[in-house]
Amino acid sequence: MALDRPGTAPRNDLSAFWMPFTANRQFKQAPRMFVSADGMYYKTSEGREVLDGTAGLWCCNAGHNRPRIVEAIRQQAGELDYAPAFQMGHPKAFELASRLRDMAPEPFEHVFFTNSGSESVETALKIALAYHRARGDAGRTRLIGRERGYHGVNFGGISVGGIVNNRKAFGTLLTGVDHLPHTHLPEDHAFTRGQPDAGAYLADDLERIVALHGAETIAAVIVEPMAGSTGVLMPPKGYLEKLREITTKHGILLIFDEVITGFGRLGSSFAAAHFNVMPDLITCAKGLTNGVVPMGAVLATAQIHDAFMTGPEHMIELFHGYTYSGNPLASAAGIATLDTYAEEGLFERAAELAPYWEEGLHSLRDCPHVIDIRNMGLIGAVELEPIAGAPTKRAFQAFLDGYEKGILVRTTGDIIAMSPPLIIEKSHIDQLFGTLREVLCALD
Ligand SMILES: Cc1ncc(COP(=O)(O)O)c(C=O)c1O
Image (cartoon, rainbow, N blue to C red; front, side):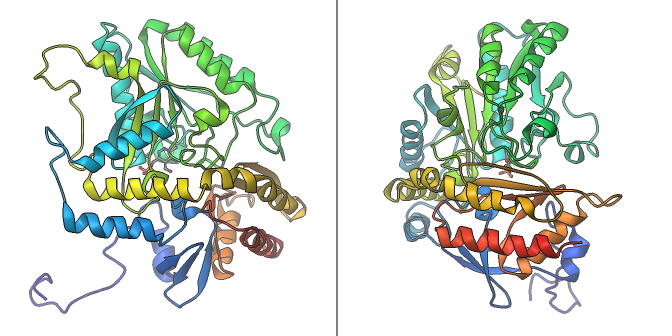
């Protein structure tokens, strides 16, 4: 084969692909391969069906192999494969932006396209900094994140993020960043269904940070309205409202990172609508295209956007963008995805199924090693007591055993997280939690 190195036989093994966020050596000794997917199920290379308990990576909210989405991508590839993203346009990107605007809560009028959640985060942070500068407030350069926050893996995102392993190997990160405390109070919150009562006061720590640095130096606060990747942490009642109040009081922008919570996960379009707390910027990705083609977006209020629309009209207003911003295939997939959500009422369906999901999840409370269970919308987490001296091992074993028994779950630390496609049926919920019970009961 022309592409092989001269003098070597063609190779197709597992060594070349350095897999992301994966225990590469473990995986390559016992690979887990999906070769197809349909509806709620993946199929493995051995021909086994695996129930998708995680919507891929929190992204396939409409399930797999959805005809409208598949057909839209096929058609788009044959019609307009690529159009330059800078100084040129194509109709589908405008259509998708308009559709997103119409779906989002009212203050969000404008959409900036990216290719991932990580890029959406970088984009939102940069828009926040540039917004203040555009208004003559260039001293606002500090960014405030939160402990245990996950905002993707680029430098801005890991700087404001608070997951230690995602930060510690990567040097000094961005300067001028501070962190709020995380919102998990195990003693008060364990086994709470939905939002915990205690903990709104944790938002008051922002006042301490403001007093320490001076409000006039702070550009933005970024949080996940419900923290997903760290292991599903709910915002205590009143917490997000307080954050909004304090940021507004001090002229600080509030960014909600909705890469997981967007597109129906909590039973509403976005968490901002679900909690009725409006930030200034929303980041999203994943469910925007059902995970099928990479795409992300930042939603901005008119106030933010309009601050940039000054100066000579031939000048670029924001020096930022990606070669694939609003890519035609991604735009076509996004439109078809939003159509699918609307036609099948999937956000409402998530809200309707949430009580059944909650009951099933909390029925696992009596399983061995379970120290907490948390849920909201179609998200659930089961936290296990770590094995002494071997943190993460017990939950990872549960993940492996679950896969062998036909369910896909995710683990972070010793937390098992689940976030199924919103097309899930009650029988699938029974299968997921029934199998997880067997797995948990057999764990060391
Ligand atoms: C809240 C949040 N922000 C950002 C990201 C990063 O998204 P991506 O992996 O598409 O870069 C994720 C991914 O899980 C996320 O959950």
